[in-house]
Image (cartoon, rainbow, N blue to C red; front, side, top):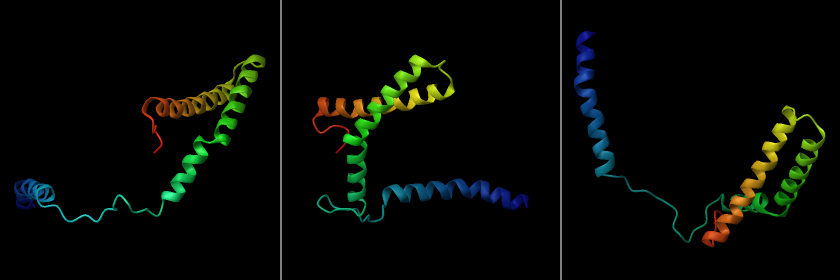
Length: 111
């Protein structure tokens, strides 16, 4: 058993190093999608992108901000109101970040 441990210690690192060199220096051929092709999940991702940055998302976020403001005004700021605040202002920040990226860089954060 001791001899086996010595062999593993001696040749294990060398073998791992050899596989690492082979993986970098002699890469296998990769079959990636070309720039003009479409991927099977493109339509789903475009729909999700539209839903997360469209009119419905803005309406829900605006309603959450208004509801949070009313809850802050008339309650004792319990755990539920704090969670609602996180949802409202997190959504507002996400929608604002998308708008800011579009204004700064043209195409924006969404491609």
